[in-house]
Amino acid sequence: MSTPLSSPPARLDARPLYRQVEEILLGRIVGGDWPPGHALPSEPELAAELGVSQGTVRKALTVLERRHLIDRRQGRGTTVTRHNSETARHHFFRVRDLSGRSVVSRIMVVSCATRPAEPWEAAALGLAEGVPVHHLRRVRQLDGSPRIFERCTLSGPLLPGFRLEPGELHQELYVHLQQAHGVTIGRAEEELSAGAADAETAAALGKPAGVPLLRVQRIAYDVADRAVEVRLSMIDTERHRYAVKLD
Amino acid sequence: MSTPLSSPPARLDARPLYRQVEEILLGRIVGGDWPPGHALPSEPELAAELGVSQGTVRKALTVLERRHLIDRRQGRGTTVTRHNSETARHHFFRVRDLSGRSVVSRIMVVSCATRPAEPWEAAALGLAEGVPVHHLRRVRQLDGSPRIFERCTLSGPLLPGFRLEPGELHQELYVHLQQAHGVTIGRAEEELSAGAADAETAAALGKPAGVPLLRVQRIAYDVADRAVEVRLSMIDTERHRYAVKLD
DNA sequence: AGACTTGTGTCTTATACAAGACCTGCTAGG
DNA sequence: CCTAGCAGGTCTTGTATAAGACACAAGTCT
Image 1 (tube, rainbow over the protein chains, first blue to last red):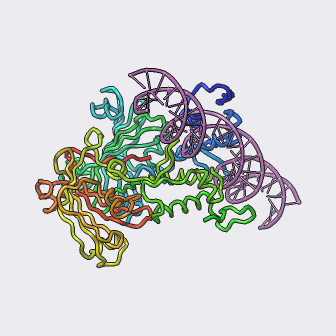
Image 2: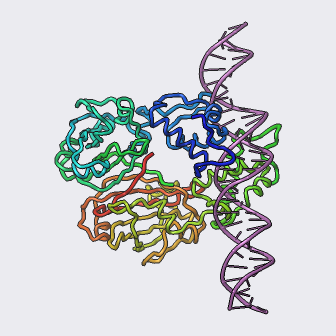
Image 3: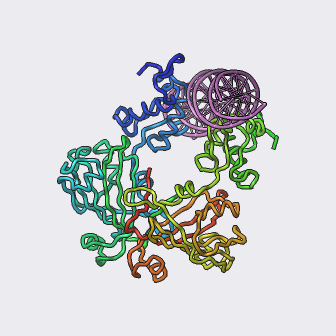
């Protein structure tokens, strides 16, 4: 990739240079050239390699940093973000206690199976109906009590050979996906509504059926924007809240 | 303000220059020197006035733009953001229909009164107990049906003389606050939980008492980060969802 | 352990040109 | 003469470059 992007007389791509740089760098990250934890070349090196100025590289890196794809630290350098339990939780787990503090959570896997996608799952994941998917049931304990029952459906084609043994899970799911399958979740969309405990959820949470629960449907996308997971969470909000910041 | 911020030999403030510029500009906006709709001086003019380079001004303006405090348009200039119903809704109203499309909503004011703050309201707004606050009850119709019952408590000290007549409200509340009281809402925090309709809410929404509803408590802050409103919304999610994007 | 060196990202300035929006004044056609 | 419309000029923000001072981290040498 030693052809300069910016030949002063003519530029093929009409988009701003820094956008093109951003795309090239993103490609190396999602393509696996630069796996999680990898240290990127320094800004002057990238600038020289791509034939642009350091300022242009900086602008591209700033965008990638805002998307949490890279970590930059003055003096240390820039690395591809490696999900750990804290960062994954911070970005994708919005439940807090009544005082707004984050909670300690323990995850128990109840079941794990691979089966054909149901229509609604296929639609959410952008798959054809009947394609194999992995289905996972989990219970989350918050501050010691079972509070969240989750049914997760994971894209079979994107996660071949996915399997979790029932029992305690010591890792956030997204950390596992990155480490064991090279799939990095970049963003998610959630839809919240008022729900009530069905029989299965009630049993899992030790609550009477019909008790009001917060119902959250999530679709999670990887950094290449492919739908990886659709999840239905039923949350007991007796002692917890789902926190949102608007601006 | 003609003292240059950056005297090459010594700088009093350790923060980056662009942060200081940002703060000065923010001060003029919240202080009323530059009211909503006001056209800012051009970047070269600001740079000359503040004794910094245009690049530094640009960086400060970029931050203010991301906070939606200013609008910039190439060729036209930069203006202080004027809230209108669309932008206010887009930023602070997260309810969508089942397909994810935004909904048309009509707001009916049920009651408006000024009375001493209850303890929880005073705590949420950072006021002393018993300070006067304005209390508002509203019903929102989504796509023609009453779906949201809202009880809003507004800071009395920040909004002297606030009053709304019961009846249809043709404006978003935050647009009214900006136009009639010069208070611009900059951000809000919400806490969601599973709720059930109390008698008053059930009556307002035409639902049986006890039906599961999405309960949303919001605290809204102005651009100077003072708590302006605490609001409790009860949402019927039969045909709508509360949408959240995570990244 | 402490001082030095090197490599890194951060901040600031300066310059140049590109592109969008607006105004002004000219001109062609009535 | 009047006016619609276009051409050009000018002001704005946007993009790109280059260069230097600075701050931070991590080795390396004494």
